[in-house]
Image 1 (cartoon, rainbow, N blue to C red):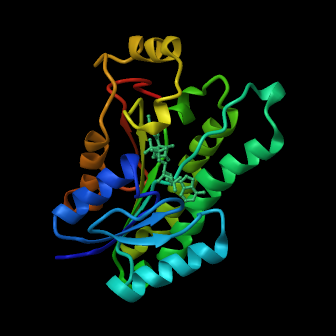
Image 2 (cartoon, rainbow, N blue to C red):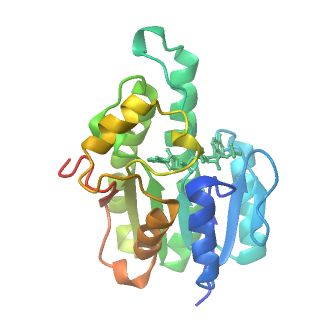
Length: 234
Ligand code: NDP
């Protein structure tokens, strides 16, 4: 069955590969993009997830084209790194707004349709750094660990309506986001990664698709690591 799928931040990086994987499997896929152009072959809706009006408009547009969203992948994310003593409060707040409040906002907007349909899948894209902590990333790590409480609370709230809510925690995945990671930090993280390599967006997409599929119908409130073993057991 072709489902209505919405991937936030689906214009590049992990989100784009996730979106294409759903489309290849036959789903109707919309992506949000904030800057630049929408990707070819997918429905692009412009949306900055920190803007409640834009978020509402984006979901309405997707629902008008494809019907109520059955699968949400809340993937939009950003960083503004600095050591805590010199981090500007607005950089802390911006990251929380994008990564955590934005994810909550999108989930809330699609939940209504899922409740009516008595079926839905929400997948939050968190990060292993939410568990490990990360020097220079107090804002980012806080936003990503906050997603765990969000995931589990929504899993409780929506479970009786046959809606699962899960979170993935990628490790180092080759996208623009890690291009700025210094070599020393990268080597340090890889030395703590049993598979000794970075991951690919495709490897994230495989797990996200599994969580959104029938095979994961009894999985909810879970935090699934996709980090080559980095931070295993956390
Ligand atoms: P990219 O930097 O390649 O992509 C980030 C995406 O988020 C872009 O599509 C971007 O849109 C979008 N975005 C950023 N801010 C906003 C906003 N305010 N409103 C709407 N969209 C926004 O990163 P990745 O693909 O690597 O990251 C995707 C997710 O995976 C993020 O949540 C990230 O935290 C997480 N992650 C990534 C890891 C990695 O190693 N790469 C590891 C762990 C987690 P635009 O292009 O318009 O700016």
